[in-house]
Image 1 (cartoon, helix red, strand yellow):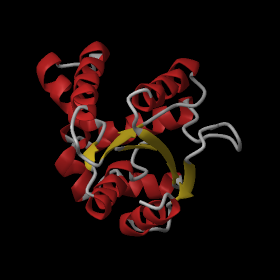
Image 2: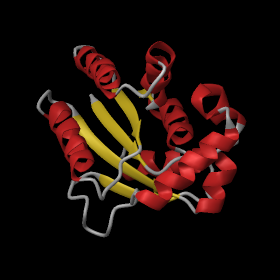
Image 3: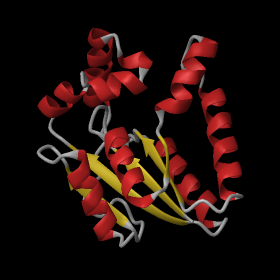
Length: 183
């Protein structure tokens, strides 16, 4: 079993690349908003304990299957130590269960991400992004407040790939990941 964690800033294309990678590999896609949207619907707020509990229930049950792999998407601020530790703990969680882990980091220009923030696919799968004005405001605030791109050598994981996907389609990026990691 394999675990692929796709990282990047808002609207960089994590979910869309994950969808394309899912088609290439047969891995299951568990994008970040699958739990976020559910929790927002139930709690009417971003209730982190509920999000985490749901995620880890899925992770635990998934590792008990014979499915080939899981793709997870995350927005990870590298300048927040607790968030970096979360990623390390997540990788450790899977590795301790015999799951080989991979980290992919996507980057795109702000102009491109603002365009992608309005795409049909994004809005179809992420109800909380359908208020474009609010979504764009949050995107800009997060981008200005946090650093979502790692510095050279910062990610020490042995199976790490960083891609600037500003001018690449999701299918092109998924194929790059597929070939790089020899899936």
